Length: 598
Image 1 (cartoon, rainbow, N blue to C red):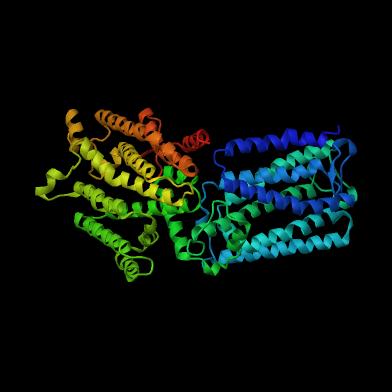
Image 2 (cartoon, rainbow, N blue to C red; image 1 turned 135 degrees about the vertical axis):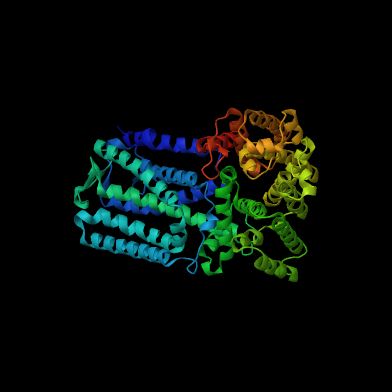
């Protein structure tokens, strides 16, 4: 029986911690471990004196035959371990649920916040101050409310500090990312506590408790204790994430941020006056994330495992490419689309002929304001051109989008060019223009943001592999969108292939679901996987900190090709006629590939 409390850990807390560690193992970064370790130290230091006070004053007791014996300031070793294991479990669950979230988009200040948001923050402060006052009253009164009062006096000041510093940010976070990591471990520990109280592993003295039970042996005070401690852990993680979001979002304020920021740098970010936030940049990031979630579920999932500033810049790059593509695709005529190409080219001319202080930078901003719809402006303004070579961007706009325009031609003299992809060489050229260029741009961001620097030869090898992988990904994209493209009057399958099947592009447009189309789709997928096989091995040369995330990005998209081969995809909820990968399978692909490279 001297090991009864230890058995609680062996049966209930350690297995859960082990399970969460196994699930999160491929996702955990040095930064995640740093956050968790820091919170464990803080929780231990904050709880030890309080717990010791409760034991010395007889509010908590432990039968001698339920503990092993070693104590620190009167607190049993098993209880000390509870400080650690509870903080670890709740932190791991918070990290798991918040991995997909780009926290930069939730930064805000008073001017950016709605009256409702300001009211909620103020109401939270009033509530927590009221709880502190109630705790003081209960402790002064003594007797049965003592334990509950001590809980409120101890926990609520920490909660009030965190709420005051990060309240606006916390309220804007998705509810599930805040509530779930509080409620789930709280409910689990309520069950564990009820079992322990019923067994007599520990006890609360009757003169210091209200005597109210939620169910069975679970005292109200114990239920409140686990609820507030898990709340404090989550609030602590949120404060961390807010500080990191500030560091990663505003390079002008924090030019150099190490992989694991120092505590002093984090405190500086947390204490930074929110009026100094560049809210135009934050709103642009929000718009970019919304675009990514709406247009590419695969890349949105993959982006969640990229670190810090690299993730933000990749999202901004995708947003620019998506906005540019939509401006041209949504044009009502060829002349309108050509106008957008000219405007986008002029924009690139302006930003690449300037530096951050030259007059042409101002002209670029004025040009965007005067020539682009409001909803698209942030995508252009926030494109990290200082980190990107101009060549791939100009090729994407001037060559790739120009080929897309060929499908819209109505001039009699140009009808012969309406379907510009005549053979496999044209197919590869098109894929290079619209996908290989983007792959190279992503790599350039990777090279800039990673700590592990590569030689010029290694970078060149990886860029070449990115071009080849771009072909593979674009072929998968074409294979998926045959029906969608046909509705737009476009056929990206090589005309030579159609002739082999005794078809014309018009036949595909009229009957995109005919059996021969499936034969052509599988032929294109064969080409996609050949290009994938040619370049996949080279990805092992990538810096270790981004190798896993980039492999996830590629594999998530190639999984679309696999479900097309297997005919196991599901219909997209956002685009009729488009097949997508089931969410559970996307998560499994991401976890499997990260785990394999761990």
